[in-house]
Length: 346
Image 1: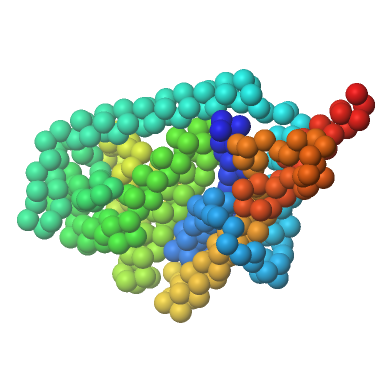
Image 2: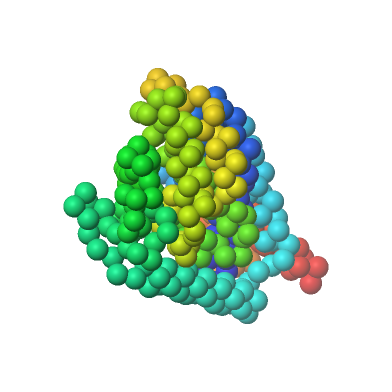
C-alpha cells in the first residue's frame, strides 16, 4: 500500500511539475497575445493533468489528440518509472518513506493553519458596512477573505484614504476575485502545497499563480474602466503599497501587490483584450488544458496490486504482468523479468 502510494505521489508530482514548467513558459506570450485573463486560465492545466492521472482508464484517447504533449508526458512517466524500478522502493524502505511524507504533509498543514489563524486574529474586531463590505481598524489594505463565504474587508478609513474613483477601482477588483472564486483557488493551492511539500516547484507555482490572479483582476477592471483611467488605477495601487502591510494570509486575496509593483504597473500598460479576443483566448487555453489532461491519461501508469504475481512454473507463469486497470506496468514487468533471471541462474 505504501509503495503504491509513493509511486502515485512521485508520478503526480513529476507530471504536474512538467505542467507547471509549461505554464511558466506559456504565460507571458499568452498574456501578450490573448490577455491576462486568458493567461490565468492556463493554470487549470496543472490540476487537469493530476486529475487525468488519477482517473480510471475508461477509454484510450486518440494519439492524434495531442501528439506533442503525449510524447513529453510519456517521456516523463517513463523516466519516473525507470527511477522507481532502479531504487526498488518497497517493504520497510517504502513504509519509512511514506511515514516521512505523512509527517511532512501534516507539519505543512499545521503551519498553514497556524498562519491563517494568526492572520484572522490580527484582523481584530470586524464590523459590517452598509455597502456590503466589512471594516477593521487593524487592516492596512483592501482584501478579500474567506473561502466559503468571501467578504470584502476594508480599512476603517477607506473613504478618507481613497478618492471616489479609487474606491470604485478597489471594489471592482475585489468583486472580480469573488466572481472567479479566487479564494477557493487559493485554498486548493494551499492544500496542494501541503501534499507536495517536498517539491519546491509547487510553492514557486503558487506565487506565480497569485500574481497572474491579480493581473487578471486588473484586466477585468480596466476592460470596463477604459484606457484613459489606467493612470489613476496605478495611482490607487501605489497608494495602497505605501499605506502599510497587513499580516499575509495563505488564502486571502490582497489588493497590495506581493510581487514588485513595477511589474504589475508595467502590465497595466498593455492593451486589454476585447471580448472577442478574450473569449477566443479562454477557449484556446481550455483546449490546451484538455489536451494535456488527455495526454496524461493516455500514458498513466498502472501500479501492481496487492495480490502476488503468478507463481513460477504455474499455468500463468508466462503471462504478462499488468496493473489493476489492465495496462502493462513497466515497473512490475521489470521486477518479474529480474525474478525469472534470478531463478534461471539458480
